[in-house]
Length: 247
Image (cartoon, rainbow, N blue to C red):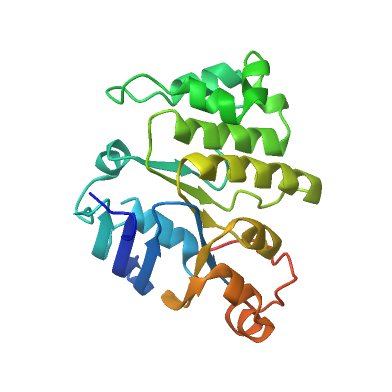
């Protein structure tokens, strides 16, 4: 059980070796029990691998404490049951199914009654489009479905991996509103390269470099320091800083 002053997620010395190659060399990060924590870094810094390590999707060592309990030896399905929701980079929406069917597939047996009232309160558009094929939705609307699925089962943390990657600026604005609404209900770990979005949403940030933690602190402080953003991210603090891929 965490208190208001303790991190909901605390990662220490996270290491990942894949195919004999050391991807993560000791990542440290904390996610507060409220608001948005941004995970930043240049292309190949190890952000997606860090998320996969937290979720147990790759072999890892170190410490991953969630809600006060060590979870590094737990399987992914056990972590999901403990309340971690994941919105993957590609959104994972089933294009041939309706919005309602996509949400229904996310209902987790044993998690209690799915919280459709919360989903429809935050995203009334999904209720109005329940019978619409998800493949006909805009990128922003599909991201809405992806985030909504993580809210159905009473999750305590949402991990959103590159939710604006490849989206037009107008759609990025839609996604920002989606994440803003979601973060009012559940804390979010946001993997992102759009610094304007980070500035708008994030309270704190963690920056990775070469598979290690290079910076931790308030997001506003980092983004106010042009020299630091150029040194750590290779861009000015006013750049959207989209990247094409990550290790």
